[in-house]
Amino acid sequence: MATTGQGAQEEGSDDRRGIHVDVKVRTFGLPPLAATLRDVSTGGAMLKADTPALDVGDEVVLTMAKLEIVATVAWRKRTYFGLVFHRRLDHRELLMLRGSAPA
Image 1 (cartoon, rainbow, N blue to C red):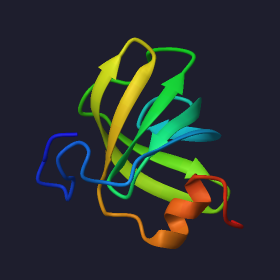
Image 2 (tube, rainbow, N blue to C red):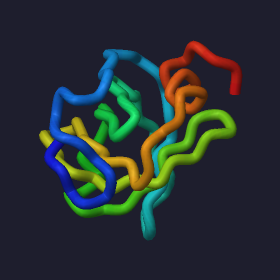
Image 3 (tube, one colour):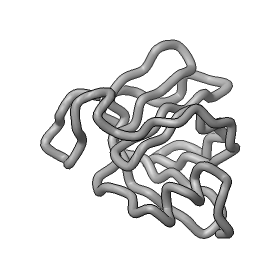
Image 4 (cartoon, helix red, strand yellow):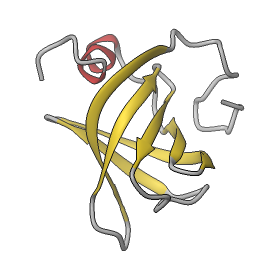
């Protein structure tokens, strides 16, 4: 991810991990979108959805269990989306998104 002024860092600087975790994504004016979290770091994530419903610049809320994270869509390639989180995740939140910590 490129720096956006919202706390994101250059691509590769975070500890990215490939995963496969189901999440919900909400954005203004659309019903919740089911997606799969494919990659996550403290500064952002990559999602795979069934439809290309999100556009670059959309603000979204990523939801999994009790965790809600506000992000902006940084890029889109067909049904894959790159998100930049509005704040960095802490260690517990990162483990929750990776599916290796209780909610």
